[in-house]
Amino acid sequence: MAKDEHATELWSPLSESPEYLQAIGLVTVEINSMEFLLASLLGATINVSPEIGRAIYYAPKGATARVDILEEAAKAAITDNPRLLAGIKSVANRAKGIFTERNGVAHDLWAIPAGKTTVHRGSVEQLRVADLKELDAIVERARELKGRCVVLLARLTLGRQDQGDWPATLAEMRKRSKS
Image: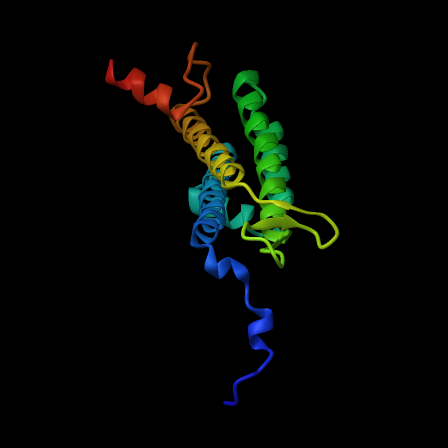
């Protein structure tokens, strides 16, 4: 195959910035595993196996539509426990915000402009210096939301009855189980 002499014009300058490639990849991986837990949460919410919950959840191609299904299923299925329903609604709303951030990461132009040495992101008309801390924060929000999903899954698995002061985070759940 003949080498395209213009191919080097189309290479991503991010290949010279592995820390950004790693951070962008981590955003994708963490949000994917967050969605896996949201899909499992849907199954537990409607009293079907996690596999069936995931099959239903992943049927729509848009992430926001999938979370809308979880939220609507929870409203229909959880009529006896307002705190549990509020927890699922909170997770759904926060997931939508994380998806918006992920879309920005995925659809921004990532570049090192001519004459610059720093990675930028945005649109051709409005590039700004990229910040690894911004990507790290998205990953942390996704991880924290995954922990909340695990707590909600435990509540649904153990029963929907109001069990008093239940932990809001995975870390709090682990801490209480050790004492």
